[in-house]
Structures are given as structure tokens and as C-alpha cells.
Image 1 (cartoon, rainbow, N blue to C red):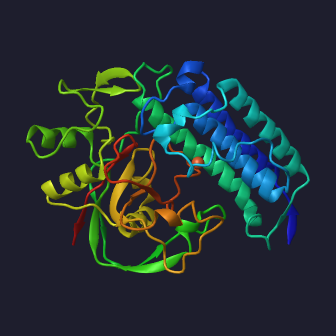
Image 2: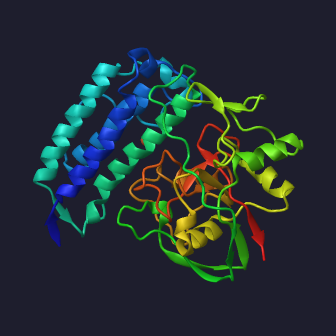
Image 3: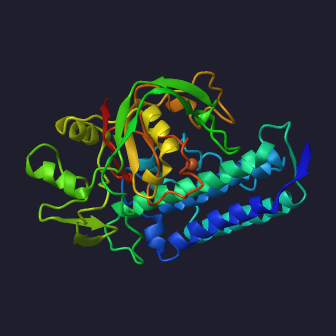
Length: 360
Ligand SMILES: [Fe+2]
């Protein structure tokens, strides 16, 4: 069945764009262009890459349009390492903002006359538009990681992680658990929905807090998170502030999270345990930090790459660990229960902490 593109798809595109522009508005051209860390792209790369992704998937793949410029090499995430992007002949800030605006104007015109054919997997449920919206929202979080690594104080100061729910334990008797995404915009790595068999387990009702982490640092059991200082303060977006004891801990690597869990007689949950718990007790999750799991990033049984191998499949294997949930910087559209994030186990600039699990 073919239906006209819904106006809310254009609204979602515009909402994501407003969040990007609001984040970057206070920054100077130098801040946008500079490579703040070898771990991250210059912000102006993320910006133009967001426009290029939208051009590629909506104007060119869906709309059949010719390329708007010669950007395919510079803004393909697989062609150049992040650490080298500052040396590339990138579009400057003004050119990049104009490129994004030009792509968007053409996309809105295209959407006006577009019919969403459910027989076309790229268009069913507005998938391609969802892909572009989520991509932009995810890059906004990546840009916040860059801004956290930048030295100068950022104003306005972004929000801190939401206060976690009260301490406690969620207990699960085990048995069959539903896993995987049915949202029309769910990514290939969330599909297909399926069932897994779980042994009985317990999961903390909240993530590990700064106070709990600090206590184990004092006892010599674990290292300080990145951005913590020996005097009990931390640096957040260039501002030095006291470490709030009750906030979920963030900026810890998978290795550190795994060590912490073992030292306190617990373990990291598997991603299946995490998802089963989040489906049963959603009020205990969200708004805080990404949570490291013990799981490697792999395809679900029956996985099929869609719409391109480079989104997920090339990262499958033993190199990456799965993170679940979503941080204070993650848009609610992305932070769905079935969403799978992944990163290298040594990474600390991401807004990630942990939640403790135990066998029952
Ligand atoms: Fe990207």
C-alpha cells in the first residue's frame, strides 16, 4: 500500500535539526573546525557528514537525485580515521551550515510529493527518514562527547545525568524473554525479534553511583573515571565542579566497569538480561548513562544487513561490547528498550557507566 509521507516525518527531521543547531550555536568557527581530540572528529566534520548522510539516503537513494557536490570521499566515515579528519580539506562552518540547509530544503520538497510504499523496505514505515533522523540525533551525542573532551568551559553547561531511582534489586525468575525491536525505525542489529531463555538473575534497580565508585577508589579497588580529579572534583564541559555523590557514574571503560562489578561480588548483565529487565520494569531505566553489558556485539539469529553492511555488520565480533539504555545526552527516540549501542572496551569519553547483576 502506498500512502503519502506523513507530515510528522518532516517534523521529526526538523526537531533533530533544531537540536543540532542549538548545540552548535554558541561555538566559534575555531571551536567548530579544531580537532579537539584524536578520539573525535572536528565538529564541522560531524556537521557536514550529517548533511551528506541525508543527501545520500533521502535525495539520492529515495529521490533518485544527482549528487549536490563532491562530498562522498570526505564524509564517508569509513574512508578516513577520526584522528585524521582535522587535516582534510573539509567544508568550513559557514559552507557546512549552508550545505545542510540546501539538502534539507530539497528533502522537504521531496517529502511533499513522496508516497511511502510499504512494499519497499527502505520506505515502509518511513524507515529511510527514521534512519536519517536517528543518525543526526546520534551524532549530536557524539558531538557532546567531543565538547566534553574540549578544554574551554562550555556555556550553556549541558545537563548532568538524571538522578537515578532509589537503590534496590529487581529479581527475575528466568525463562523465556522477548528480545529485539519491532519499532518501524529499529535498526538491522535489533532484528529480528526473537525469544531467548534466561537463567534466574537479579539486576540493581539503579546504575552504580559516583559515591559507590568513589568508595572503591578510596579502597584501591578501581581507578578514577576519566575527568575526575584527585581532590574530589571533576571537569564537566570545561567546568570544575564537586562530584555529585548520587548521580550515576559515567566516563568509565568496559574494563573498569567489569573490574568494579567483580570487586563488589557482582557482574555486568548480559544485554539480554538488561533488555528483559527493562521491558518488565521500565521505570528503573533511562535518562542516566549508557550501561556496559558483558555481551559482545553480534548479529541476532536470522540477522540480515539493512540497508547497508557498514551500519552494524562490519562491527560484529569480539572487538566491541554492547551498551544498553541511553544517556542524558541520548534522544528518547533513540533510547528505546531494544536499541543496541556498541563501543571499544577501553573507551571512556562516552557517557557510560554500569549496573550490577547477580546470579540467583
Ligand atoms: Fe555517521
